[in-house]
Image (cartoon, rainbow, N blue to C red; front, side, top):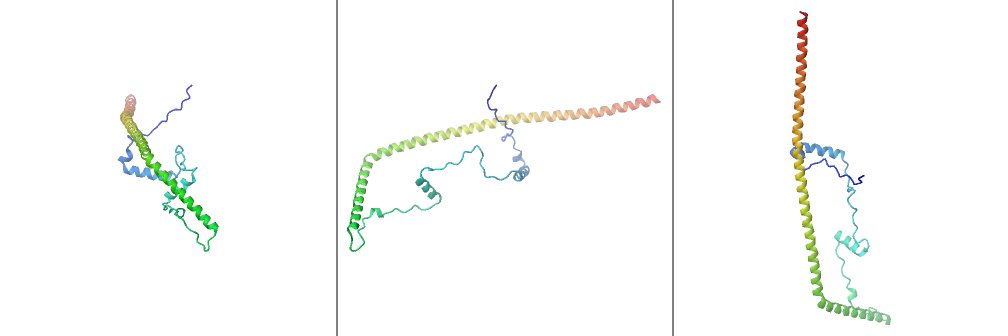
Length: 213
């Protein structure tokens, strides 16, 4: 016993059923009836997947995405960390000078790291960027190729659907014409039968009249 799911039966031939396009008044009536009967809803189709939440596990990137969506300006950079303020009180204390000295050491270490990073970037940065650009170009080409293949498949599918529906439409027209001819023949036969019954009735009455005379 087969357990395969039966294929869906579609009774709509959009490439063939063009009555709404040929008769605008009919389309207005259909739209009016649909507006009255079909409730307006914003719910998506059950097969549509739920919306994907970006950066759900990264609050910093999520906050940045929300900032861009709200068209808020980018926050200004904090330049205090790059300054070397001296103690502002007078007279100054040893703790204040010690804090200023620690800040100076931190700024010096930061500049040293920046210098090392710039040296590494000058040495390895160009090749790294070339490899990165090559990977991006390869990804872009493969994506464009997949898009073109999908477009071709879509065009082929629509062409096959149109040809199939056009063939079925021609067959429906022939069947409808044959049905009309058969109905007309049946009506003609019925009319002939009615006329024949009337003629038989007239002849019977005539026979009765002749027999009586």
